[in-house]
Length: 466
View 1: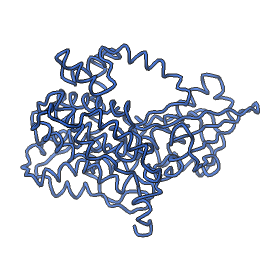
View 2 (view 1 turned 120 degrees about the vertical axis):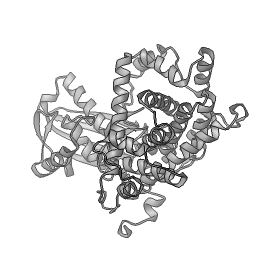
View 3 (view 1 turned 90 degrees about the vertical axis):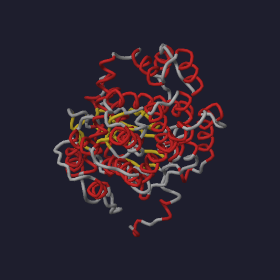
View 4 (view 1 turned 180 degrees about the vertical axis):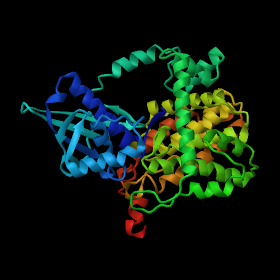
């Protein structure tokens, strides 16, 4: 549920990038990679309609180059794309040079494929004269599938080997109650069936490190975001206003100065907003972020976790970070299994709504909440995002996306406090019911409001106005 990648979108950037990687691996496994003479990429549905704003064309080219979105130096992206545009040559998988003109070889099809709103087809003409193709679907959060789902059985087998296979909130509560476990403790046991404790800690440290570095970068970078909307970065000025005069020279020292800065209620609101904005401004600049559960909602979870670390608990350490991320991931997986985390399928409720629910539940456990209160917090957060549409102006993950992360983070904190002060046995809406309702709402929602930029603010505000 938490993946390191490049902005601005998990489903429109990271997903197509990973799809290109999978296609190259498929070609290589069949000894066809060295025979490729020409590649054509077809983008369908939402990938086509908002592909330019989401840098989908960049993503497929970088994927075809064999670049790794987790590790590529961000500063190399623009030069690599510029070279392809100028020379009309793409070094396939970093080895084989082929002629490639992005204007001709990347085709934007407004048609929607039946399987999913985010479809991408890779087509290769081989030196033998044969043409082969493969279609993938980016289903949200950087997850990629093909229609035949060849890996589905293997994943089901893995799921069934978990000590505690969880599909719904009721499954999670029953397992916690029967075994006397916190949600984070249960998730660790499931993770240990896949990898060692050392691997779990290493990956979670890497995830938090990326989130933390992202906030630091966003709070210390001023200017205007790329894309044509001329959106001014706000996190820098907010940070300048809020921070103390205490000196620091790196992110860790920065955190210590924040812990020593006096905060009141209005300042807390501003700090949380600052943390969220900082992440999504980095995301909008093709920076490195963590999908949580998506790139468009990447600011909510780090903002709420940072709130805990610098305001709620000055002694907070990696064990608290680990606990938070484990709970957040489990709640996100329940939404993914029961509904969707793709705005192209469910609108922004599937991104900001899910991220707010994840953060609310995770914060509740850190603040001493029971598993019942954790799920109650997640339900409250999502309940008040139901029906939220996805209508990015210009197809860019900027307006209203960046501000929505600050709103989702504040709602998550509010939801946690409401749950901690409530008796979950008296709750009228269980988590599973709100997951089901969110999915029904998604299916009823007009396509105009599902990351197509064909409705809402995307057509109500003209680019010329910006």
